[in-house]
Length: 97
Image (cartoon, rainbow, N blue to C red; front, side, top):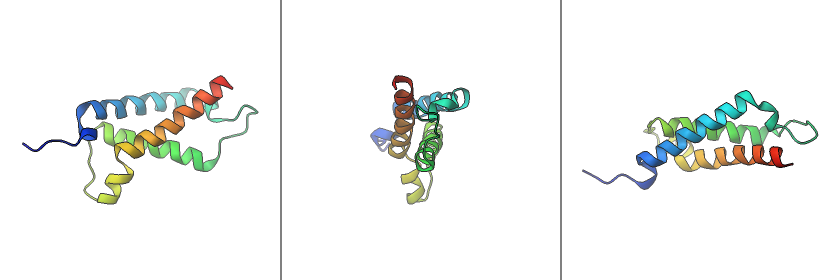
C-alpha cells in the first residue's frame, strides 16, 4: 500500500473540515466581523480569498481529490489553510481592534 502524502492524511482533513465549519459559522452568524472598525466593508479581493479558502477547506475536508492538477492545487490544503487563515485573521483583527 503506497504511503499517503502528509497533507492527505486524516488529521489534515479534520483540520480543514473543522476550520471550514468554524469559519462558515462565523461568516453566517457574525458577518459584521468582515467589516473594518469604522463599518466599511472589507475589500472584494480579501472576501474572495476568504471564500476561496472556505470552499477549498470543505473540498479537502470531505476527502475529495480533483483529477485535474490545477484544481488539485487551488482546492488543496495549502490554498484552503491560507484562505481560511486570512479569514480568521480578519475576525481576530475586528475583535481586537
